[in-house]
Each structure stands twice: as C-alpha cells, then as structure tokens.
Image 1: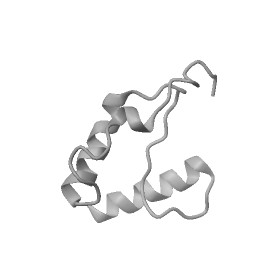
Image 2: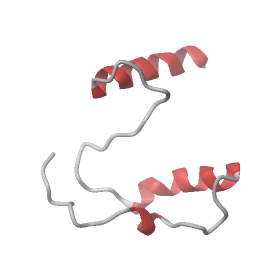
Image 3: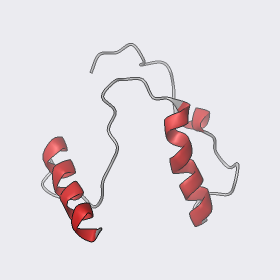
Image 4: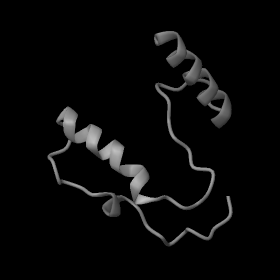
Length: 71
C-alpha cells in the first residue's frame, strides 16, 4: 500500500504543479462543495481525537457564495 501512496503523492504533485507534497489531497472539479463530501473528513478527525464529536459540522466549513463561479 505504501507504494501506491507514493504514486498518489507524485500524481498529486504533478496535477497541482507543486514539486513536493506531503500527502494526497482532494481537489474539486467544480466550485460546488457538498456537505456530504466533508462528513468523512470530519468523522476521521473526531475519531483521531483532533476534534471533539460534534465540534464542527460540514455547514460550518462551506459557503454557497461561489457555487456558480466557473473554475
């Protein structure tokens, strides 16, 4: 699995045109972010102890102000 992770890091670096990245990131292909997409990230942070359960919710992190902006 570590080999696949390294490949993903290289692909991410190439895609965002950055010489070195520390991990794999998610980049949206549209300007719309759905609350559903953020829930797994928040759950992971809660399970790791980085956040208290219920400390934040997806709607705390996003705005709909830019949904219709073209990328």
